[in-house]
Image 1 (cartoon, rainbow, N blue to C red):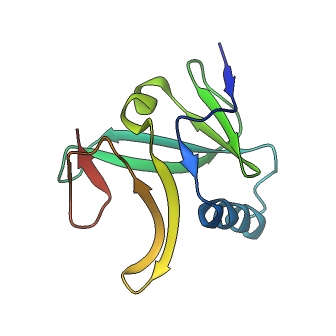
Image 2: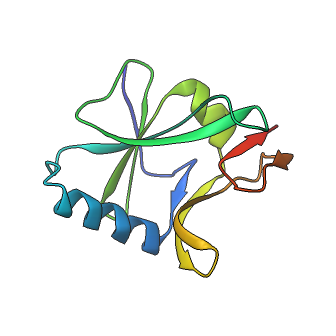
Length: 116
């Protein structure tokens, strides 16, 4: 069963929301799609972040709508991502989405994997 929330467990920065919208426009992703945010096993620290567009929610998903972007998060991922801010950087160290995760006790050098 779906759980629509407006007080979010995961936040998205203005910069990240803008970049998600740009990517959707450039790739003709329909407006009803959402950004699936999650974690899976792997990476040098044990868990790795995942991002992708999805047409619909799945059973157990939490839907977070913020700054004009819909995020779909499965229950297992929400456990690891609660309190996280999804940001976007285009600085000297590279361009891409960044997860500012207060639950991560260890991260790898590239910032794409973590452990709790």
